Length: 359
Ligand SMILES: [Zn+2]
Ligand SMILES: [Zn+2]
Image (cartoon, rainbow, N blue to C red; front, top):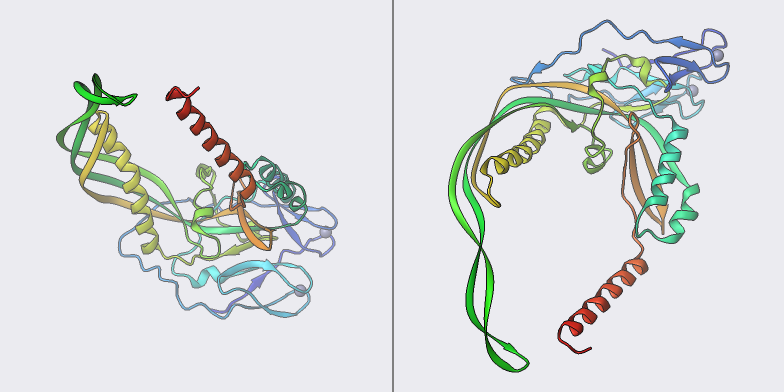
C-alpha cells in the first residue's frame, strides 16, 4: 500500500471545497457552490475488545505531494489531513489505512471558526482573578486550528466487590475544664464522634461509551474534559468531513487506552459503592473491579485547539466543536490573589480579636 492523498475540487471553478459546519455539505471557498455529503451506508457497531492488536504499526514517512501545485512537503508523523503549506489546498491522506484499527465513525464540525473566536473571547472576559491586561490586549492575538482528534470509546459491564466501613456521626456531651480569662472553669462541651461498622458488598453497573482520547499532541486534561459529546449522532466515517481541517490517527493504542478507561470506571463505581454503604462517612478498604462484555469503537471528534501568549508564556485551550464547551490553561493575577489573601487575613484577625472581647 502507498501513502496517497485526496483533494476535493469544485466542479464549477476547480478551487477546493471544504467541509461546511452548517450542514452535511462541502462548500467551495471561492464560488460557494455546494456538494452534498451522503454518508456511507454503514452501520456503526461495537467491537469485542478481546485479542485485538492495535499497536501503532510502522507508519510510512508522512511525505505528501500536493495534487494542486505539485509541491512535496512533510507532515507530522500522525497527521492525516492538513493544508498544502504552499497553495493552502486542503489535503486528506489515507494514513489511517496503515493503522491496525480503522476510523469507523465521526462527529463532524458544527461550531465554526468565527463562533469559536467569540467563545474564546467571552471565556477570557469571564476568567476570575485573571490579569487585567489579559482581558484587553490578549483578546486580539490567538491562534485557532480545527482538528479531528482520535478517541476510543469503551462499553463494559463492571462488577465491583468491596469491603469497608460505614461511619455514623454522633454527639457526646462531656464535662471538662477550660481556661477562660485566666481562670480554670468547669464547662459542658459537645464532642462530634464517628462510630464505624464493617460492611461489604457488590455493585454492578453497565458503562456505555467511556471516552478516552488517543492523541499525544494535546494534553489529556484538555481533550478528556470536553465531554459530554452527542455520540448518539455519530456518522459512518467519510474522508470528506476532513477537508479543510487538520486530523490525526491514533497515538495511544487500544490496550493502553482501556487501562485509562478502567481507572475512570473504578472512580465512578466507587461513587456507587459509597452510596450503597450509606451512613455519614464511608471508608473502602478493599476493592476489586472485574469487566465483562467489553466492546470498543474508534471515532474522530472535532476540536478547536488554540493557544495565546501572556507574558511570553503559551497557554493552550480547546473547544468542543459540537457544543461550544471550552477548557483551557490560564494565567492568574498575582496582585489580585495577594489582595484577597490580605483581606481574608485582616478579617480573621478582626473576628478573633472580637470574639476574645477586645472590642
Ligand atoms: Zn468553486
Ligand atoms: Zn499546493
